[in-house]
Length: 97
Image 1 (tube, rainbow, N blue to C red):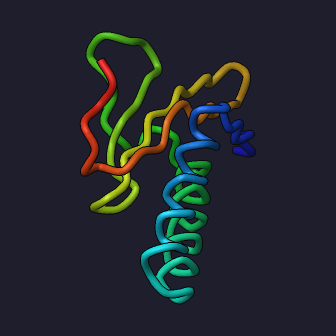
Image 2 (cartoon, rainbow, N blue to C red):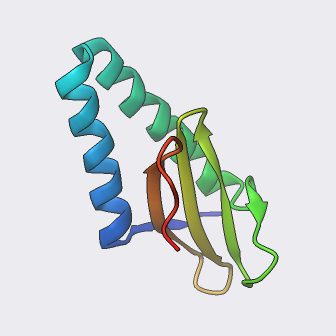
């Protein structure tokens, strides 16, 4: 099953913010580990789009951890064979209301 992974503007900004923080505060090794870990997770997500917990209030919306410090929210559209990454954020930050 070949699924397309589409990044929203918010997801792209959130990912860039996390990488920037790692670059500023940690070593290149941690940045490379994070990038490799998220790439591996997205490969798994393409193979199993229902890997994370579904939302109770929204159809085809899923949310959960990429790792212990990063939360992903995405929408899976099985008809279009598309996964839209809605948001990627640091788990230590308060969610938007």
